Image 1 (cartoon, rainbow, N blue to C red):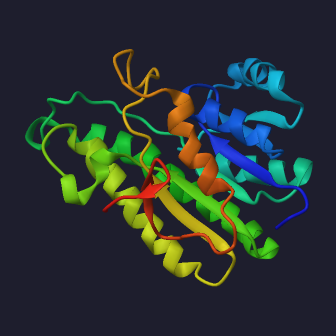
Image 2: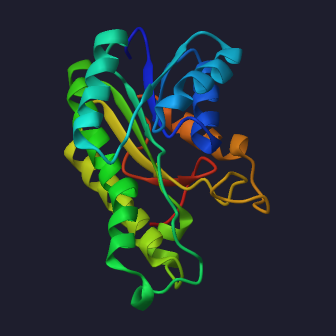
Length: 235
């Protein structure tokens, strides 16, 4: 394990990502908060610094390959190589009543651009640094709506994008076997955030717990698995 654990959390200015950052800070991890809107970097840092000084926030658009590369290079130069990556940034741009036949291709592209390709971009830039450390923890924020074993109708672009993210998790875990890098997916459940809405039964604190647990797994911990509330669930 690196002497100084550095974590990148995407979409960390609000909701689950913000809470993941806060809880990692409490575990003495230096957190880099990726924030899409540059104007929100300073407020995000100020809010998180209530829990300590081990945090910095920088603009990050996971949909932009060049921006992702610049962001990771900047993190490495300013703070050191990241050993934890939480791919939390995501979008849910469709209603639960949406169907494949009436969902435009543009919405599919928009959803996959963030929910799948954003994570691919982040992994592609961060993994080489983890390999040098011989240590890494990658947590992909998936959803129960992406479970193939429970797949049903509604919100097709979101569902399929999260199922694809789970496939990415399995592929990466197999590729990185033996490198000291563990890769897992998790479902936070239905959470009271801007995305989940006020009627959701779970708090951001409850949702973030599993992400933090996966971020801090020992070397003997699981890889290539899907979790909810720290327990494995079917793909």
